[in-house]
Length: 349
View 1 (cartoon, helix red, strand yellow):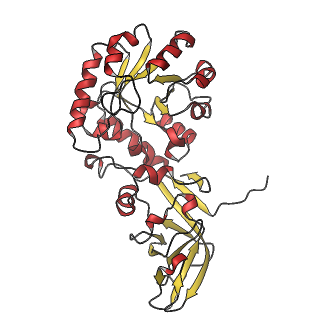
View 2: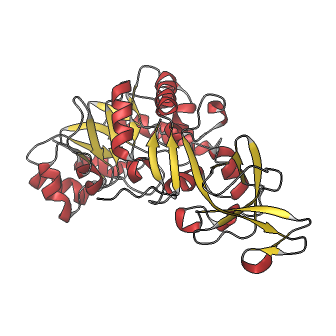
View 3: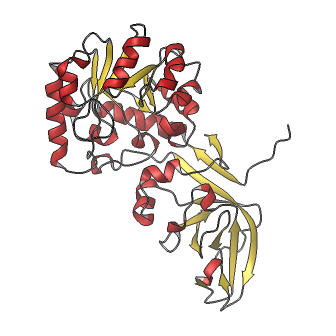
């Protein structure tokens, strides 16, 4: 097969990834610290994320679906994997075959696992106020889980990234469940939940966004390192005369004779039109290049007037610090990561 290099790449910092996990583990107190690697490791590549974090000491991983779990086989030695969406009728062959635990989310899933799970351990999600997935508290305490071999009993915080009274209510609800539902471990905190303090840690924490460079709450500022560095190659450098326009809709007008760098990237790669007009840009050898004009499907323009030496084939580094880019674009940190498309070559450094 002929190797054709991509004009887009993600430089992924493995040291930053593991440093983020170690900081989160330290904030988890005596609880084990796991890792959510759903959505293909938040877009970074789940297998490589698992490999790096397992080498750092992480033992508990979570994906959303059974195809995601199957793609990670075989698992590294000593690693545990759970599927957050539980088991539907079409999932049972995979659930019985793979060395993976389902996170049961409803009385129907519990019944399905009882019938076909052959007594194997499972995880269970309890809804303490998010109303997304999970058994209701009265169902869990009413005998629906009797006799199950529950490895981890989980719930999920709905508002942990905010100073909300809901956090304390969910904590109290989860604490009340512990007495009525026996499990080997209990888990409540996501990335933001870890920042709420040790009361939320229980036996296992499940960070996601903070592993990958996202800042879930102010307490994490200055501790979480950037992991993802998108870069794009210059396709053409062209001269635009004063008064001429650039891009669809003629939204940018040159106020002087300008040099414009056209690059191989656009909204088809997850760099959406909301980035335009918000102060975004890129850098080349430390020089700032403002983003100009409207973002196309796979072409973007940057003002390179102050960078004389830039030329076709050069690589630009996008401004992509997650908290700052989220504030500027209006996209969430999650969207910024998971939206980066398949045309980016992913390279760990």
